[in-house]
Structures are given as structure tokens and as C-alpha cells.
Length: 431
Image (cartoon, rainbow, N blue to C red; front, side, top):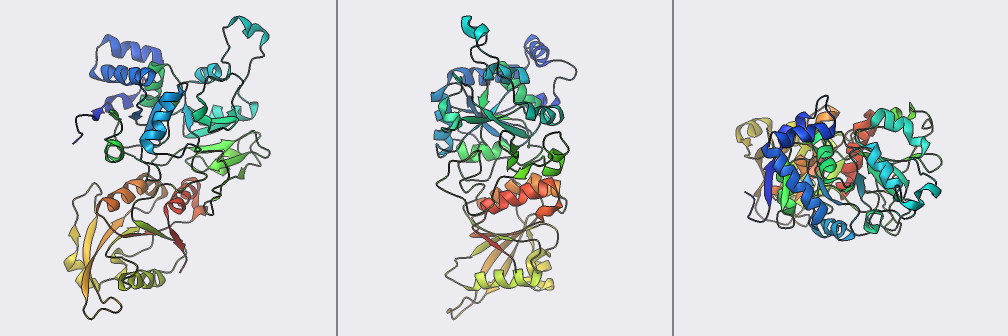
């Protein structure tokens, strides 16, 4: 349960959205009816406008940790709460294209604005905006002269990333706050991204005061980040919108991959979140096996880790997707069936079983525990449950999590899943 300094408040009803109403009309109706949710949204919006402590809120991708993107002290609160490196830029969230237009034209309405050329969104992005906004797409655009954005948002870059979320709840919050909101994922830095309010509370309950609970996130992975002002255009972070869909848009036929899942350059300033540092990592060591790995080779590797006392694999987690057999043949079928135990946890169908192990150099055998979880076979289910699975196994204090990878060639989400797993994994193997 939340402590007295951090409240988790449900606003799930607002996921239904405004229907045919505009955000302004929707908000006016909520206030007129004095709904409980309207009071919570107003409180959260006021915190965003006035406080230096960020607010956690749900979006269609993952939960975000939001602050007023125009106030340095507020944005610094994000870095403090997450314990995030200050050279890792933040994504700005807006409630409409009009809000982005105002952000690009900070002197609009001032006496000198008539003599100042109006800045527009780079035309290269218009086909993407028409097709994918609102939605899980972040675009990189030049930061204008005299920008209202706090410098901490851009981390010394001359550009910033911005997106218009499809979550009606997120857009309503931004609309009521009437501020562009800087919002990375609402987790402790490097940890798996949060897809529920409970995940946020686990990481940040002693660092923030308010978490808006909108239920589980729909996508489960962060937005795709694209750079259209480079030549050729590039994908800086994979997400729910893939390269083939982008190439169907005018001007994006030759879009390239501008990210590297491994061998991160720690000296280079990242152009987008997720490009430099290790991310999405539980406390446990993560070993990722390529989808082409043979089951027998995986089993031998895990068994060797269990037998090697230096590895420290006492309790292990197994995350299966499409091909691995339950238990990985670490125990005979008849023994496995009789010893499987359901594990009370946020994951359905998580089970445990004992493994008798003769450790190298030890005169006697000992029993270790394996936790087995089938993440799913279709890519959407895998993407949606990935971060939750890593978090749940971490809460069981396993030493190692073995993950069955999927082919990154299987589509948009598959590439994004493997990108996140490679950033989480200490080791990637093909056996």
C-alpha cells in the first residue's frame, strides 16, 4: 500500500475518452458534473504547473513521469526522482499540434512577432503526423531560438523530441495543465519500464507524491523515435511503428536504422532517449538467447550455470516465448509435473519447481529453485508483458533470468522487443 507521502489514485474511467467532444468540451463537462476524476486531474495539473516534484501518469505506451517542460527546476525534479543521467534527453508531450506550434513560435503574440518569421513543423513530418498522430511516434525537430523549453529537456542538443499521445487520459492532463510536459518512463533509471501504477510505486514511492492509475498500459513499449531532419531520415529508437510502415509515407521511402542495440558509445551525446545507457534492466543478470538457439544448447548452458558455484545461480527465472519447453528439461517430466507450484504473483501462470544440483567442487547436492513463465507466442502479447515479467521475477530475488528471444525480422514490435531485451541483457547468446 502507498505510504502517506505517495498517493495512487484511480482515474481509469477517463480512458473512455471524450467521444465526439473536444478536449475543452470534455473537460468542461467533467468540471460541471464535479466528477471525482476532475478533482484529481485538476490537482495533478496544478502540481505540474507549480511544483518541482513530477507526477506519474499513464499513456498508451508506458507510464510517464511528467513535469512542466518550460521550467528548469521542474525538469530537474525528473532527473532527481529517476536518478537519471543529465545527458539523456527527454521527450516532450503535447495535447495537440497547436500546442507544438506555440512551442515552436515562443514570441507569437509579442510586439516583435510580426517581424519574426513563423516557424513550422518540418514538412518531412507531415505525412507521419497525418497517419500516426495521436500515437506512439516521437519526432525530432529543431529547438527554436528563444525556446521556452528548459535546457535540461534537450541535454545540450539543438533539437528536441516531441509526441502527441493517443491516450485520452494523458492528453486531458496536458490540456488542463496547459503546459508541454517532459516525460520519460516513470521508473528508476535503467530499470524495466513501468506498465502499471504499481510498477511506478515500487520504484518511486519515496520520491514523488502522486501517481495517476489508469490501468495497464496498452502497448507496453515506448514510442518509436524518428529523425527526419537528418539525411536520410533515421529511426533512433524502435517502437510500435516500424520501418515498413514509415517507408509507406512520402519522403520516408529511404528511412534507415539509426540505432545500435549493442556496443553503446558512452562518449557520444545521445540524440534520443535510450541510445546511450543500459536500460530496462532488473537487478538480476539477464541472459538473452537468440531465437535460432537450439533448445539442447540452452539447457546445457543453464545447467552449467547452476552447477558453477562461481556464477551464483541459486534461484533462476525462465521467460519462454515460442519454442522453449516448460522447465527446459532441467528436471525429468514426471518430476516436473509433480513439483510444479503456482507462485502468488502479479503474473498469471507463473510456476516454480526445485532443481537438485551437484555444484562443482561440492561433496553434496543442493536444491535450487527455478521460476518458469510463458510470456506468450504472438508478438503483441510478448511486447505487452515483457517489462512486467522482468519486474515480477526480480521481485522474487532470482539471480539470473534466462529469456527466449524472438526474431527481430518478425515485424515492428519484434524488433522493438529485441532492442529492449538487448539493452536489458548482460549477455546475448546463440547456442
